[in-house]
Length: 109
Image (cartoon, rainbow, N blue to C red; front, side):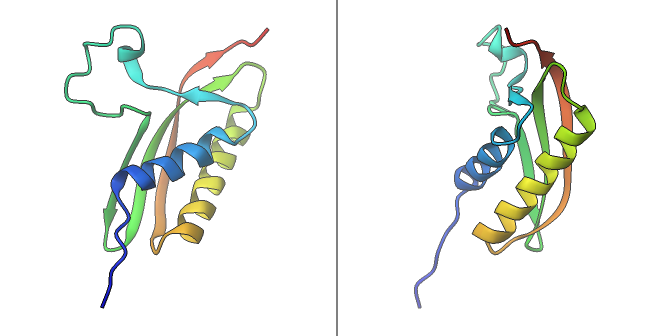
């Protein structure tokens, strides 16, 4: 029988797209390597997403930059809801915890 393999990169892409589509999210936080590229030699959180899958349950930490003037609680809740919806719709995994960490706030002109 054939099998379907979903790579970590594909799951990360789903999480990123779900996050960036939320109104009030400016970007994901890539850490200090945004400013000093050679700092992140082990490439942890290259796109502001950490996730783990255990027993077909996905849990994630998503690090974001929010837009100034938006309700941060609403942004966080919407990111969680959007990730859960897309992961459970597009993959065979269920979603456990989705932690949204707001690392920075940017003002748009």
